[in-house]
Image (cartoon, rainbow, N blue to C red; front, top):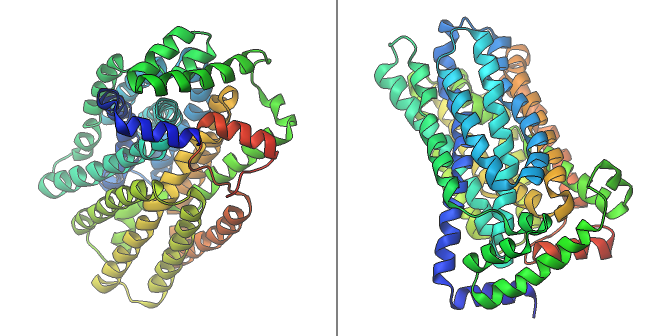
Length: 473
């Protein structure tokens, strides 16, 4: 019987107290995901109101939107190493403070320079959270429930985006004529930042990180709070054995890429990061309101219509979490890539052939909703889950940090270039560019992405080693 079955069945038979404790820790940690979603999504509604106040051009508009993403790349790169060095819990508490400082800076920014610098600071927190929270959740959760636990962070990300779209639409429609209304849109993110800082003081440290530091008693104690007694002891033995093996090696570093199986995992991780972003998802998440205005809506109507993108993202993520418990990661990713590419192709065709106006506006809206159903219901949850589970323990912070650094840099390139491309070649040709990239993503996913469902993190590491490649089933 596999450890997945043992862990899942035993935990299902008893351990209600432990499950509640895990659930509480999960919801607290995923406030980091909520902040990730809100801070990336709120710029969608705030940008139209910033244009006059901050005298934005197409370039500075792209710079304001993308500066957070640029900071996030470096937050992700540093976040993995910091989490390895100082612990997952402690560094998430630090991130909450950075979220608060960055949010206040953007809300009070008097000019473009301060806005860009503040969004860079905010990006450091977003990038750090994008690495630390999934790792933390993956290391807390049992193998049989890891998919559902880790992807709750994705649910909180899209919930944060929906909250950003909804509050921006409300403030924009009710107080749209007020000077500086965008400042109120931005400052709301201080509330979950404070909640994250307080809540993380009441959750445990990762048992796997504790074991990696030699604190085996602490690791066992945390596992006993998270699992039924027999399951906790068995999992502890697996974690302890792997931690001892890792501690006998040199400190993890890029020289580990000389090992073929580790190099293959890193290539898969970087590829996952790239193909998740080249769908162009953040062109819709950051510029959805502008896209709908170009398609034929007025600004206030576009703000309201854009809520549909947030609603479908949340609904699709619920479906994605359910599917991860039923089907493999790899087929979900492939179906998602094919769906998003088809939707982008249709957006390009509609924008090319249908005259500007209300009809085109509603057609484009229906297609962006379709796009997000595939993106948030399949591609995004699979990507964040697999990045949290494919890297071995000694390389988990470094490997995921590097992969998410690449993810955010691709995101930066997309978000900076999108308004410039829209102005230069038009909406239809811009989306055709993403179609070509989507086809390349499908080819890569089909050829290189492994299947990881149903194995513990320790089993996955052993399987990668023995296969010297990717475990496909």
